[in-house]
Image (tube, rainbow, N blue to C red; front, top):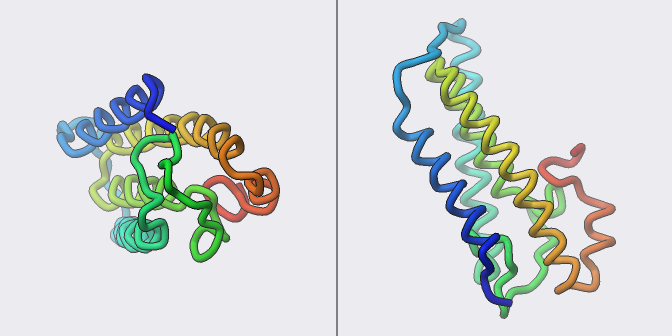
Length: 150
């Protein structure tokens, strides 16, 4: 399958949100108790570790685009037994966790934007995965979208 306009649109919006997250203005800042900030840091670090592990498990099936790679295979073991989209989950963990650590309401809003984007991007991606892999419908029934519970 080749990339479509929708693929580029999703990745373009994702890039803009990442850029907005990185170039955070000093607005909507808040102060949290240190323990909450450190929980946020722990979430961010676990998100980073989860993302790296998920990328290693995907190997040649990885693409930033929703359209599956031509020579890819359905990965349903490792982290993919717990979440159909562990890379999106790891980015969300990192985004929300670092927002708490830095006390940035602006970053929290960007995190909500990422959550919405990943919901719609994963929905589109799953339509394509269902067309490509016969076992995807069963996998989808067994495993949550972003976590074992959702």
